[in-house]
Image (cartoon, rainbow over all chains, first blue to last red; front, side, top):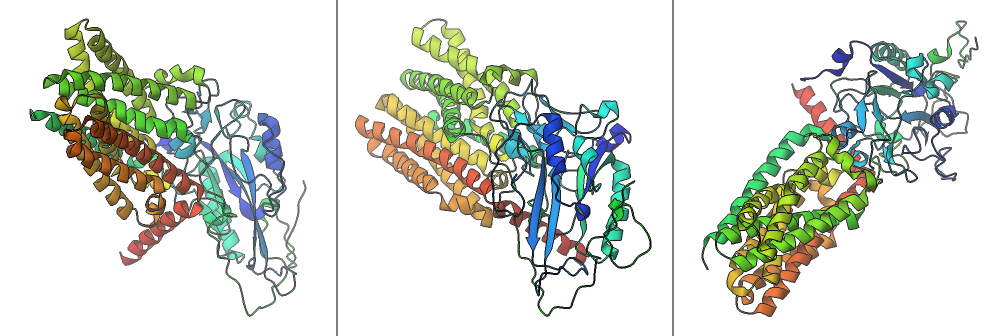
Length: 271
Length: 333
């Protein structure tokens, strides 16, 4: 890779490690995020999706706690619901602040930018609401806010970081399921934690987004999951769409040349 | 310091909250049947957020941008080969389509008054940014070409603008393929090899249709041939795309708009090179069918993409297959 973000930032890249194995589904992160960032209310509905009434990340939901109910054993634990196996997975989802961020790549105004902390942030006074970032994101994170017409997503509390404060969600998380810190240190901590959880009997535990060689160059916000990513609504193998862009431009170039040649040929004959 | 020890297995050791081990409380009774969860989505919710683009803006722009670009190219070819009426019709048509394009693009913005923010940067990683600069180069030339032709003023400048717009027009008619394929929308992204050819063919067919509709029979031969050639390229590209995409191509194969677009384009192109050579009325009908066919194709591609973004299986299953393939290759090696 020509440009190595981690190297450029020289260890100052920050991130989230969301350890879903200790998430209790209290949604304090959702509330703290809304409060601190003044994110508008976006519907108070009952969805019937377990305890999840926020449904997914969007312009007006920057932390989303997923609730998954499964008739599967939780490690060696006795669920105590008759003869049924049962487990309840909870996970607080957030913008991944990708190393190779598609939203940032495709933004035609330069509104989305890479901060000095290695995070990806929208400048809402620049964004003109073209909406290109929305289908570019492989995770379905960023959205266009109806009320203002511009794109909005998690900033990793860009305004708290200079004061030495951690993001609101991490600050409020009562179990430390959301951990904030230097990305390198979080990765080491996550590796240790994965071994510990697997040794406790949760063999299905895995890290998601920790690997710098994945399709988005590693995520600034990564996760310890207890099941396949798609169970939580995450793509199993996300790839930044601009990885194929050089080939796309080559195909466009050939097609444009073909169009020119074709139309020239149709006019060549007199009759 | 608050500490919650969720372990109930009698361990004397007190752990910090974040060290709590899941699934270790109590001792699970053995059960005969353990159900394996068969889930590949989160309550059937899409993985991607639905594109905010509206079909009456963006799908219409895909059509109008292609029509404008290819019409300018056809106009330049007609002018250089001594067909002034076809050239004028194509130039005026291109300017009209350009006006419609700009309206659609600006109308789709969340903050239309900030559309000039597009000119703050040039980013080759953003097809929309590249497209903005293509339009900036193309627009004034297309305008000058039409204005000088209609008014008869500055013929030299008009000739230069016509050729310039004809060249820039090929970029305008094809870059829109990169615009939609450079997204995570499964149908659009996976189709990036064929999409530029499909769009170039569809653009040439619509420009041919416009020429047949508006130019006299004696000069419309290039329009008829462009329509036929464009339709052929479009149909071949569409067929290849639908086959190569496999399961992801399902929304394309299911699309009635795409079938209608192909039927209209083929009918218009074939009628154009047969009865359209003798009858002006037939030529006009064929031209209208070609324009309608191209519009249907663009709306069909647009909606097939939206459908694929809305269903998690089109996102999850190809990625799972890719992971499984990589795992199998690692194990072989």
